[in-house]
Length: 488
Image (cartoon, rainbow, N blue to C red; front, top):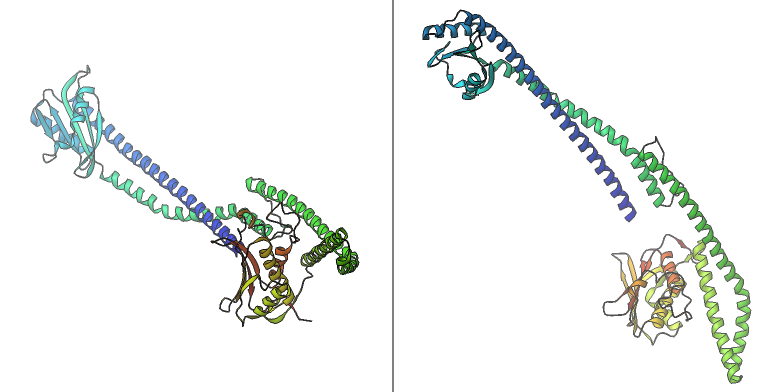
């Protein structure tokens, strides 16, 4: 479940990365398009206005030079009006010319508003003694206003200043049309950017997806998987590094597996070889046990010690043989419909624990189980509580058909397990008290209990109770395990 969730998270992460790449690509394209549009509009507008300005300036200067050659200074109002009208006729439709001489002012159109001539332009004409111009907005419309002083042949100012006002409506319409055309072109540009972004994201993310697939297959145990190396870019180098790491990991795991297999074969072989001499030794010990009461004190103690250690060695060899069957996959279930309450009571009675253990075992909880393995599992858990916990030890049986679950809990009133040992309590040969190197247990009891539970499709969990003491919980499915073997 968690592996599938992580895989889904990785795929979601790649999808999110694809979206981010597309968004970044589109944003870059949009900013570039808008910037290019703005620059193109500005340059086009400047070019159009500059062309208009140059044309009007050259025409105005040329006509003014011709008219000023025959113009008498000082003028009267009639001659000023005639000068302004003549110049305006030559500048085109809608053009207005204003001529000023000291206190006299005349315009080609008496209705023209002189407010379009700004004080700044008047000051520039009078102080700089050259043709000046200014673009102004007047009542929402754009205008180009030019002004120049009329000078004598000596270069001295004559006191006559002439201003020309021309409309820029045509130029405004032209640049507005250009802006509309460019703006309409943004939509296909952005669509093209999205398509290119999707293609780029797919190209960039393909090796990432392949590397993720290879990583997930490695996590699932397929160490032979390798990533495809394409090109010489950073992603290709990353894939090559992954392959090198995978090669080293596969070699290391192969060596570890070989070592583990050899170790398991060694344990199985040693355990098997010990069975024959142990059988003979057990028969001898049985005779010693019978004669121990008639032996002298030291000899009797020695006989009892040999008997106890032989029994302990026998249990250890039996446990090792059982673990070797789990490791080799030879362990099988022999299922039979069993009353779990009766089975637990039999386990306690067989070992003489009935008076030492409190029970809560309701009748009617029946399930197909391997009775021998359930007996060993419960005995290991209860024996562990009796040896390392404190009385009273309690065994509780519950069944929940809705959840398809049977639980057997074993609790004690001892100090509980140190927090740092909870994760290791089911390890083979692990003992929570490192000083207790020799004890009745082999260090395999909880490991065998867990393997038996797994063989039934269940598990065993260990925890500390809030009020003190340890609690071991055996979980078994109520249904028949799919790994069953018919009872013989």
